[in-house]
Amino acid sequence: MSQTEPTGPAGDLEIRKSPNGNLYNLILIELARQAYEQKRIKDCLDLTRAVLLIDPDNAQAQSLRSSMQSELHRNLENVSAFRRQAQSKEKPEKQSEPSRTAVPGNVELDSESNSAALIEATSPLAEAPNDSRRMLKIGSLVRATVLVLLSATVLSISVVSLMKPATTPKPVAPLRASTPANSSEQIHNSVETVPVPEPAPPAAENPSTSYRSSAVVPPPGRVAKEPQPMIAAAAGTLAVSSQTSVDIYKDDAYLGAAPVSLELSAGTHTLEYRHGSLRKYVTHVINSNETTKTTITFDVSVQINSKPWAAVFIDGVEKKALGQTPLSGVRVPIGSVLIFENPRFQTKTYRVTGNETGIQIVFS
Image 1 (cartoon, helix red, strand yellow):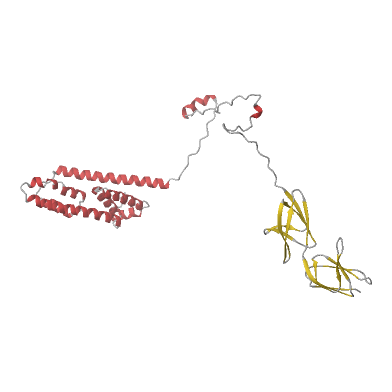
Image 2 (cartoon, rainbow, N blue to C red):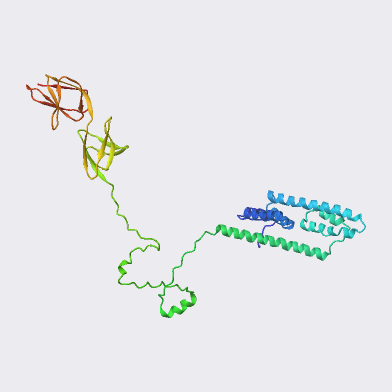
């Protein structure tokens, strides 16, 4: 037994559930809206009727169809009033001539209009011949078929354009003659070759000036300038030493830790030296191609005492005398070495760390 396609509500349900049902309805609604704006009543009614056959609950199609039927109803009311006025005049057949085609036209545009059918049935005016009415119906059917085919074509084009991936044309490499001689004629007949222009041969160079071929020729009206040699910025060296650990900064940028030699541009530089929580700022003058030496010290105030008494010195190239113990509030450099001398005892030394507040030396 052959299977038949579903018809009636079941067939409409399958169309609505199909993947392209929504897109098909959207296309028909858009065409119906354009027909409504252009006052093409017949096209608008046919398109909305087609949408409602597929989706009876489509609100947009119902709204467009209701608007067009309202306009047709107003036209029928005007035609009815016009006919009543024409029948009361001397020559109703002339006065009512414009309404002879109005009512049949409304019946053709909207076959569901009961008002148009009632006016047409009760009208005393001559109706169009049966052949003419038959031709009008055939023309209406053909027109609706064309609109449906046009909608199906637009739908298929839209689906294909959505499913087709975007591709970019690939460049075709020029063919090179590498086939045997007996098959050249066959390739010539099957492939249309495009002649590729050969590059022009290079101009013959004059032997006397060939060594200048790599030189850049300036455009007319301009004079080529020879590149100026780069002049290095003048710089000097700052040699920093210290008896203790010192970190060096400039504008919060770390430069190094003493002892170190820093290359700085010629001029004046103010550097920050840090030792623990102590800070010191020193300004140095740097001369070009010269080395400037500096020793950074941090002082601490201490109390110095010894048993028995002692003469106190700061060790160095030349000893610096501080005095005889006891000493109070003496500032000594951190990292320096203190020398304690008593003629009756052996000399003692002490290195200042910066953490002490008092120094006590005992001779034994």
